[in-house]
Image (tube, rainbow, N blue to C red; front, side, top):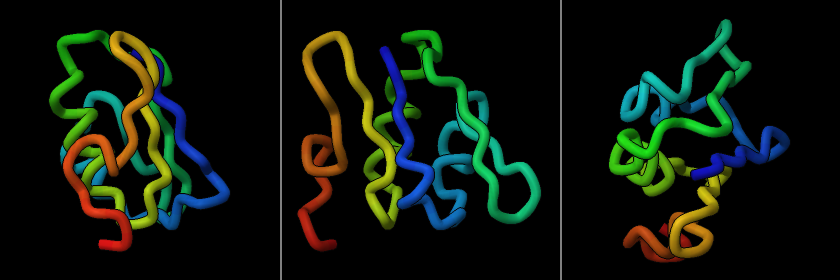
Length: 78
């Protein structure tokens, strides 16, 4: 699994850090740090973080394709 965050799009809402704290962390109030290749045991938490990102800045690639907010059940435009 490979996590990609568009840091130009990320606005620091930190929903990902709440849902997958082993993978995402806020450094200060705006800078996001993340593990680009977390263990597959974190997959469910990471996909929840993808779905929760209000600006759709997170993508997960690997094991079955590319996962975006649209593919984990978040309606486009929500």
